Image 1 (cartoon, rainbow, N blue to C red):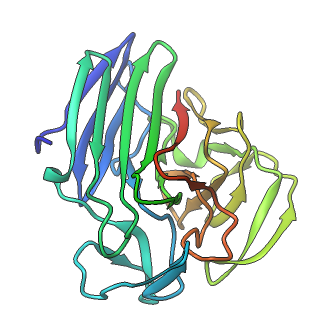
Image 2: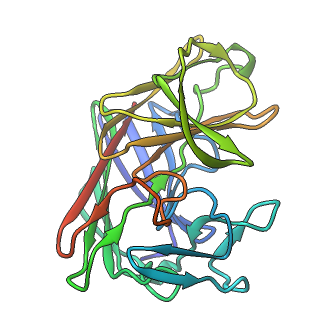
Image 3: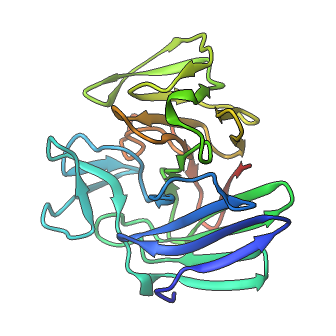
Length: 276
């Protein structure tokens, strides 16, 4: 995949796809020049989302030890592996089928740190309705693959002042976290639109769920179409963005007790969301 960002456009929408800081990333999304993503864009997080509780995991009958010195690993403030594995630009093959569509594929996420051969195929499409992003995990014929990928969009309400944004979340069930790891329980929630505030929460998501960041002149909408059963919502103190992060698998997806999806050998898991 080329180092330069590849641009697509349609009906007033424009977007770029590139490889930034070790991750395939939607580098920008704009409608008639107004940003819908912050400067960090929307990176792919794979093959797992969130933190692991240690440098290793057991899943699908395999015991895996992670090398703490692996340069593809990120770590949180407590030294726990965070947000899967980085990739290299050369790990991705990019195809541009028309002016409004890009597809990128990789098989490079499989290896000692994730010994489950598979292909990830990402298709980004623009139309008058905005951006549609579909991620397909195809398991190799060697065996099943746990599903844990997700996306990390930094949503903004155009050029409107942050203190005038309202965040409207569609979730009704929250995953209870202990030190940002799930404790195995959920609670019902009745969310109402709120002004921007600090948060780092996980929710169970359902197809058709719609999240909005609303400013006086711009509304950015994220819709979970299919295949994403969970979502993180993150906004640190004084942030000029809010992240509503679609997750195809749960936190701690790479654990034997996980209830996350598993793709049988040779089969696919497809997950789609839209941004408008």
